[in-house]
Length: 232
Image (cartoon, rainbow, N blue to C red; front, side):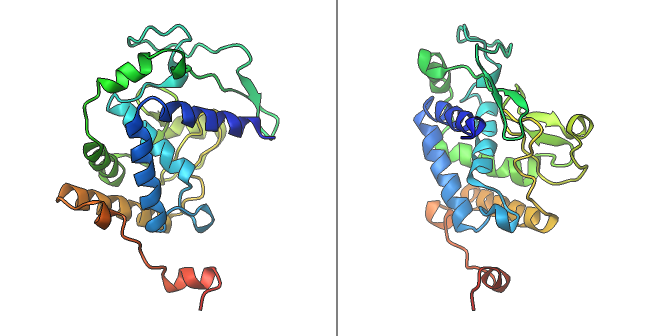
């Protein structure tokens, strides 16, 4: 009965329908994260939902996807960001707080698809850029990843001041609707090191001509992981 979670699912679906490359790249990223064993929140790594938000942010940055939450209902396909909310867009979270869940509906016309078609970057290029950015370029100490606003990031200091987030150098991801919630809050220093290492490994494989087979090679569980899940 979590209507907020339903709206999150609808938002992800809306983005996935804009361009077929979105679904293909998302499948690769999700498969990669699972096979490299960095897709388990209970172990201090990220959920599939978190990886999708990271990916959407990069697809927005390269011009493939618009910022659906910042487009008015009457968007004409040109650049223009107003965050105009539609009727009935406010939804309560399980805690009882209301959040604005408006986003532009890309299926209403072909404007968003036309925008995506104008982005000629290949799937391979996107993957290389995605892994490079989160391995080496993104400032985890200063920035919070966001798919909600143009630019793709929010100052971490702003989250500290407004919602009491902790000051740290770990990856933070803003929930698209519940802005007080850090989707990456489960990360620890040691697991962030693992995740960044996997981002770097993935970038190196693709940047040096490696293929999907090498990228998606399954990593063996460590002895510590085996113990944690009852292995021998």
